[in-house]
Image: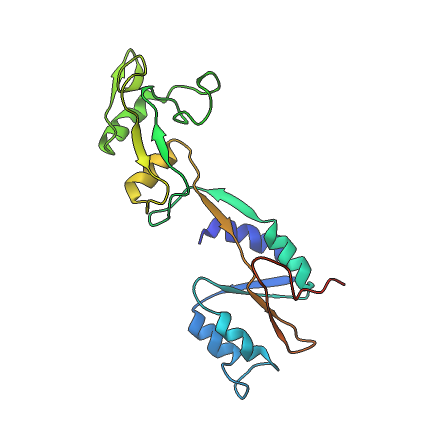
Length: 201
């Protein structure tokens, strides 16, 4: 989970909310895992949702406002090693541009010559020709260089190459899975496909 994005979330919610991340077993123990151990009436039914990379948000905001806030919060980011590539990416042959063909050449700039040694170090068969970084033939003939295919589990070399070309393949999102209401003592699961169970005031 990206710390910079979490800081943004905390900053947005700091007036009336508190966000906690920690070990899920410890959090479940603190809330109470049975009706006898629970911290507040019905809150033990929240503990089955504490699996994986999850946090707790304590707030007085209505549930629909929290779900709407997080539904609108999506940040693009550079992929990390272990992420699955959502699409394929190939550096086209010819002069190598800073976005490797993601935008038309007339709107792009040639890649800095200082980056060329790093590209070769990362396995890309580039060379310098008349002060420009070139892949394949000068006239754009030959094969491009495939960095990743859709569905590949990315390694650190691939993620470094994607970052060099400013290609963001990850999204930061927060999904609300359930909430507990102090007023009713009920836990409501939020379905990913709908907002069922959320009452708007």
